[in-house]
Length: 110
Image: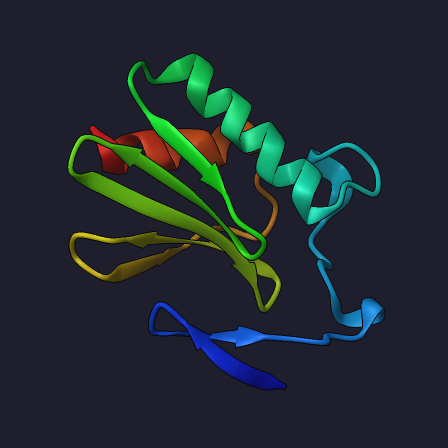
């Protein structure tokens, strides 16, 4: 399933549709795609944190503020935040709202 490396991280390709994003939809609009979730979290971050840069990529959301940066990813049923300065990953709780994800990201970037 791993077909290549993207900036040092394995990237899953050709994941069957039934194995794609399977998190609880209770906290997001029904049947939101990764692209919709990525956009929603990006908009919340832009409204909450002045001076950030948000770059949506196919497999992650890259957020920068000054020299600090994070990547928001979804894999193995959980959202994960990679702190680029420490290279540590925070695994978020399974049932989480977009606002809670934005709050976790703002803690890292402040």
